[in-house]
Image (tube, rainbow, N blue to C red; front, side, top):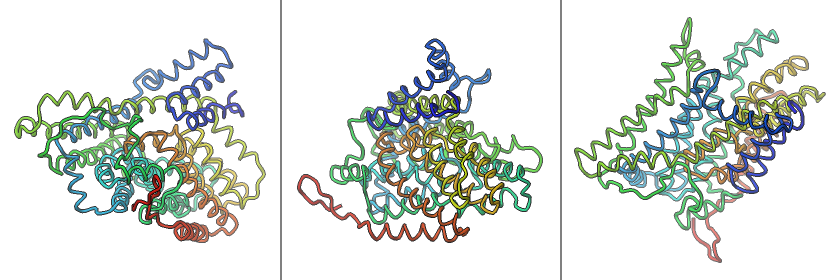
Length: 527
């Protein structure tokens, strides 16, 4: 069943089940079982063995602990605990009150979150979780739905990381580009230079980022997002209370009325500085020879850095808690155990979804779903002018089906280079840029993507609410990008492709009127 059309069945079934049932774990579980049955060719005992191995590899791999997965899970748990303690000592409340005096509008709250997303570009995991923690008090105060915050986070994390050379993404991509150029004897351009030239060619990044700011400024809502925003504006309820919200405290806990803005700012600033410092340290210790920023981020252990940064951030948070409970005595010291318990409980839904997603991604990898789809492209005899457009679409499909943009990079960048080299080498950079853009697009739409899961976790949004509300916006950005890649393919001009996207964005802004009133229960309510 490997590398055949049957390999598409598990991801497609899981995604269809998610849409129909809105139950993530059930849908992923069914996809996992189907994938294991296909790998075992229907043998029940072999299926159970494959399932056990897939579960075990999440925590134990190659005869040792799978530190990457374990560190990511521990970081998520620590972030939940940090959030609980910051809430208890009144930091979240104080920051929300401070922000309300300075950020006056819903548009301002959304723009602030988007700017944070653009600025924190070192790693998409860290971006998704950190931006959510900083932005949530402000967007909640301004009645911005959690689904909208999750969309803003998701659309400013991976898109920025994929064009930032000094990031974990940039280092990984430049490494692949270097191998592609070497394989085809292209020596007139260095890998870093090629990456920098590809930045303006990554049309999905620019269309997705532009849409975030246009939608925030103009107050444009459509699709399922409109329902969530309407509820938030009218009732103040920023998420559906009937659903389990990752990162949200399950029980009401006492909150200090003497908390200050510093009670939130310093733990989170410490978290950011510590994590970046740890990335530099792990990257520099793993680098050999001449060390520069590119080598450091290429060799950085992101998961380990997140864990160490989380430990330091949690330590500082606890110092603030003990200052309030022992010195100021405005917080009961018994709340220490409440904070630990509630912080861990708040992240259990996210951890479970993440584990299930890792399992199905592993099994899909064994089924070689991505290789099958890539093979279809490689064996086709298409007009070279359609190549950037086609690679954008196929990369999107692969990332959507497999839940990983990095996997799509690894599979499709060499294929894009090979096809371009034997047909028209002048189109190699736009074609590889289209792969990067398509992979990020597919990753945005996929409910089994870890970055999508962590974006909903950081925002405190129900995961499926985030997927379904973001989908129309992602498809819109992808549609604009597709037109741009057709223009690049037929004209050979990056400027012409970008201009096509800009024109479509302007038309969208003009045609979609600003929503000034909300129609609810027969009444028009000002937004």
